[in-house]
Structures are given as structure tokens and as C-alpha cells.
Figure 1 (cartoon, rainbow, N blue to C red):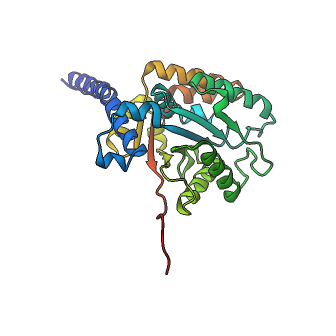
Figure 2 (cartoon, rainbow, N blue to C red):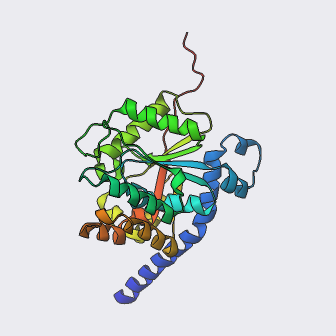
Length: 277
């Protein structure tokens, strides 16, 4: 009897996951529409396909080559699938082990696999922004670089790390501080939403697709889920980073939920048109 109960629970859980994959597409489109057109949505029912194909100009802000596929692949693939214009701004060339030149080429190759052309990839090589977990990146310098890029390309969506940086890497956390600074000081152009990738605990992080129901149930501003075909594409992108393929990276590719699921929260922006008397 206990065996049958276990089988029933496992099958029910897997069916639940399958249903979430089916329901996700509609929820993703609605969340995307609400983020990009928060004002017009209150007054009119805009066709979701219009939002998908023409309105979304997304910037993924990363610290190192390989961040784009290790952490943001589900979001990138879902946006590219909807014909959004997706760009990557990488704030270092990954020169920690003196492999910067090779890692730059690996980033271009990875982005090509994810559907991002080389013209949409920008790599910053600044002496004050070294690839080093012990280095304290200047928040003012980061903020200046990021906001200039946002304004130059008229992005209406920016995706980056949250305050824990997924892996607690200091460079990841610095990006969140920089984008949060832009939001708090009202430097972000009107109509641009800022999103941070939610960091989860160690157990959830390595449950792969089995973690999906929990991410689905917990509130988030945007949830991005990919299936087996897109997972293979994300894996192929990760394999482009040949200099980074140590044994534990292969385990990461197999078990990390970030290869399949991304959840984002809005970074709140400061009050606009604030008058001080």
C-alpha cells in the first residue's frame, strides 16, 4: 500500500509540473505585458502579441562571461522566442585567470547560441572593474556605465542580479547595488522596468525542474520557464565557455534550477517629480 501511495504522489507531482509548463506561457505573456505597459494596460486591452514582438527591448546586465547562460538563460530564451530585442552588457571580460581574450570570444559564441547577435553584446574592460571576488567595484562607475547604455539603446527592461547575487559573488552584488542606486536616485528613463534575479537557497538551487512548483507558487514579478529543447540550447551555450568547464560546472548544468527556471522581482524606483518645499 505504501508503495502505491509513493508512486501516486510522484506521478501527481510530475503531472503538476507538466501542467505548470502548459500554464506558464499565458502567465508569462501577461506578466510581460504588465511590466512593459503598466499604464496603458489600465485603460485598454492591448494584444499580447504586439507587446511580445515589438515593444520589448531588454538588457541583461552581467558581471562575467558565462553569467548570461549560467543564470539568465531561461529569461533570454523566452524573450528571444517572442522576438524581443535582447542585449547583454557584461561589465568585465573575465580576466581573473588571465583568460580575458578567450573568454570574450566564448561570450560571443554563447550569446549566438542563445539567439543574441554579436552586435547586441557589449563587454566593458575597465581597470577599476576587475574580475575578482575580492575587488570592490565602484557603484558610481557601474551606475554611470549602465545608465548610459540604457539611454543609448532606449531599453524598457533591465535584468540583473539581486542583492545576494545568486552565488554571493561580490561582483554580482555590486551590479544590484548599482542598478538599485539608479532606481533610488530616479536616473532610469521613464517606461524602463528594473528586474532582479531571485536568489534561492542551496537545496532549491540544485533541484533542477523538481523545484518548479515552488517557484510557480511563490509570488514573483516575472517567471521564466523553459522545456527540454530550450534546456539543451542553454546547455550548448554553457559548453561554449570551454575555459570554465571544470567538473563541478558539469554538475551545475545537470542540476541547477537556473538552467531551467528564472524568477524576477521588480526593483522599486524612487518617486518621480518629487517636490521639496
